[in-house]
Length: 159
Length: 458
Image (cartoon, rainbow over all chains, first blue to last red; front, top):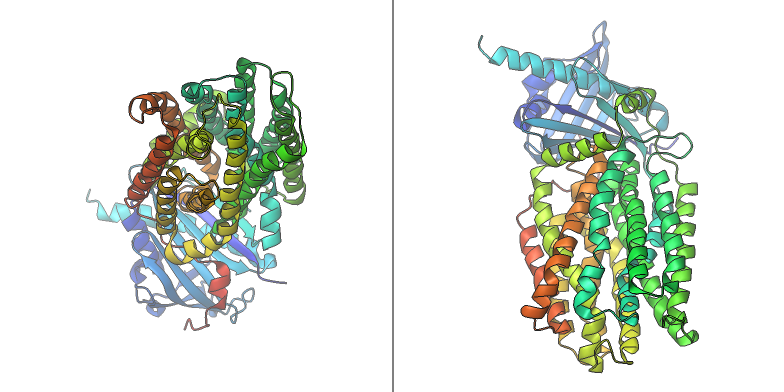
């Protein structure tokens, strides 16, 4: 089948844009929450040159089977902190994704209300048969981001 | 498509949007053609009908009060209601633009048979309410269906059909004048009747084509449950409009300033262009029998600028992608500003077609480009209500124009319609200046461009 489906995922967070943008892009932060439940990012594999044309690399590993690895290599084709970043990705190791067909990941951060952020992820094009699986993956990852941001805030605020 | 509600209050909205082919995008937007034909008749033929029925030029803004008031009241409410609508049979946005199109068709059918100004005013209110009911859910429909990388194509396809619909409305007036003679007992020529009848058919026919060929993206069970859990009807829709205004992104607020000037200018142009041509080219006023020639020539001029609109709509997609929507819109507004100032000073009827090209370029941009920016600033679950609020940004300037321009026309512009057209040009230049204040969200490239880039992400 032709890869022709774009996955669009969005969610609002009650945290300011710079904080949410940093959670997505800073290697030490993104490694803490990226990946669906049952997966984690290998912290030592994350490299990210946070600028237009900069390269990004990370490996996700299945928690209960470290030999199952999905590698993401990307180049930032747009990078405007804290508004948006766009990465052209090559993903290898995921049976549902053709490593020779690059994907585009666009993540927008829009200010909402006083100090909130609307995160909108657009990724694809996916083959229609796997788009649902990846949609679900993003949905679960965004729950993890909420947990991470809440925990991060709690660690920063002295009691 | 799935939706969950974890411990946090915010829903995660997930949609899968298949990339659409150009043919699918055109079919989806085809209904906009009929709606805009109706709008074109409202722009070009309604004011002459008032004039045929004996209205004075300084009363025109007040007689056009229907446009801004119905737009102000109806569009945000329809938008908010459509956000919370889902019918497995009819969809989310389609019921609204179907009802709107039916209303337009009935009004267009009845309009040429009016015999008094008050009935024309009443019918204009209903026609405008129908146009408004159809138009904004249609914009939300585009935003619902297309992924961000195809939104520029979607909205500028609407500009294309805007130009096409209004062109046909105007050209039909010119062509039918040469083919059909006679007039109704109220003095409305049969060639005007013919144009309205054609509009009545186009309005409902094209919307049906779009409805039957383009399915809406259904919500998931979870999203549907969340929609049903939102209690309340009309009052809660009003509350939602208020909340959306309070939470409106700052850049969208700045867009309101641009809209203030650009829509004030456009209404001035539509209301006074036939009088301006009558004076500058024919040397007559509305009470002269030769005014009918000026009206017909106005139809041709308006038809021409709308031809320009649909010719430049798709090139503007490419330009917006490369240079950004903001600078494209500024450039287009300046083309119109210069064009209108020159237009008002011409006495040769054929030369009018050159400067009005600027207005055609700007009209393509006005109907498409700001929406490309706006939908990137708002949550997709609130497209309907925000499209309605954007429409408030259109109709409030129209309302201000209605209330203020009669005085400006008489006391500042000396009751001279050519001055009114120059004034419109200046307002468009001010709109371009206000546009420079907006910080545009970074450009979204077309997915086709991305896929054509050399692979090399290692």
